[in-house]
Image (tube, rainbow, N blue to C red; front, side, top):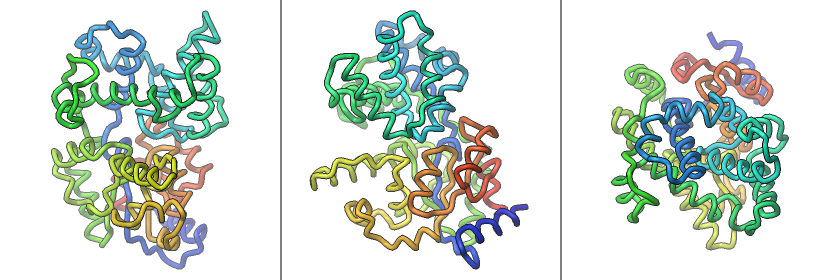
Length: 354
């Protein structure tokens, strides 16, 4: 089925044969459904804009709120095409842009203006964060440091988001602090796989039987990915040394900061997949310096559904298999073709046929 794609892969990379040792998976839009996170993003946005809204009412109407806030998914598609990866960043950018546009375009339909911005911007993720923080400083009146990614504004958004996802109890236990407010049960309980669990298990089992080491590169925290994988009994198929989450990113960024290096390592930065290639014990400073055997990337295939995934994979020379089960669906095929995806699959289950 994929003979032509395999031949193209060999020709493009100048390989005589495929010698893949590791397959690194993004999770949301690949194995896990991302809908839960989009609901959290929409609820965070609405709570921020209308802080007195009844939390129970919001949660009960999460699906309709998601559709209204994101124009039936059109804004999510446009944002993901820019390389913005985590739904914390999606929410942060939406809210910051909302406040900027509300101040500069009175009387306009702000939601449609947000969609227009993301559809027409030529900037990618880091450039968007920088532009919005600078515009916010000028227009909204607080400092650049307040508005920058991972500044106070971003952190407040992220905490609200996590509270919607975890609920009161899990948030309190995980962060060892009181949640920003009370009255949330937590959408973590609604996690769903994209496909029947038995089908996913067969795909992973097939890859393992062929000697592939399986890893993860996800913007989720460790808790947020361990919970569904353990619930579905899929966790043991993945090698712990290649299990890289946002929790690892936070630890690495903190370690780099102690050396005076302030750098975002979230996708589309390739750190997460390079770490999955080299293993958890490999020095983070060495990765950032590029001090590793780059030829190892020839043995890695990254599987993802979004712009941030292919940008990260291409940045360190790994192969990339796009799956069309993310927010753009089949519409994403042209994007992945233009950006040099080695394989374009309808879904992750087709990996077993490669």
